[in-house]
Image 1 (cartoon, rainbow, N blue to C red):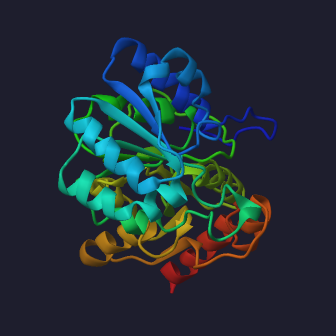
Image 2: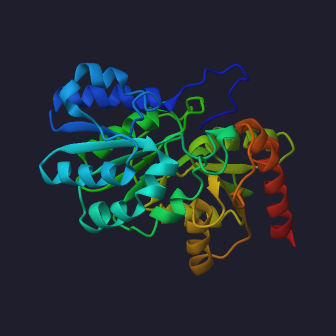
Length: 319
């Protein structure tokens, strides 16, 4: 299991893993196409465009057209990877995602770029913290939130081979590679990153490495925290959540709204199957404008903040 990484650990932009994997897949399968909304630069699709100029469609700033035309491409036998800022992809085109993709079970791969609060100072219009809550009710849409470059690449490979709609949520914020031996990517299965028996921290995406660091810090004070990388928001790993509840308390951490996301999904299962004290960490609602670092700090999505929530839930467990 993973230990706390050194402070000078290498950091990676998962968008690079996305485009490198997509280009490799496209070389072997001419059904794969990329569809963008004037977002070729921010999606890092420039290399794909040069290699496959006839297989990148840029619809401009027209997200409903982006998703609708991708459903048409899928109906024509293509495997479209739809790449756009997650706030606009899931907000502006939600009806098309619901009707054209989910209801029709179209073989469309939605890639939400720069998710969470990655746009920082651009403010609430560009924050994408509601996407889990919007998409989770679309039960046939697999929702994946990779935590590092390896998981990003594996998610893209899996999505290309999977028949059906997928949403992959990527950030532009660098993250370290997780140190987990013998990894296997399986949607609906959480990864146990750290062992622990006093409680469980369930995290996804950019929050996983912070949860690992918090567990290492807590271990120095005698608190044994299990850490799960729960990258699969839909379907859930209910077996791992049930096991987590057996530790007696759960903290969930996500770069998303505290309503309707990973924390809400875990709480739904825990409340109806194995009730234990929980803390749900994330964002409370519309956010002020500020840098990513300031927003994380202000809303306690930090190593210290996670550790504080652990102590809080352990106090409830003991009472």
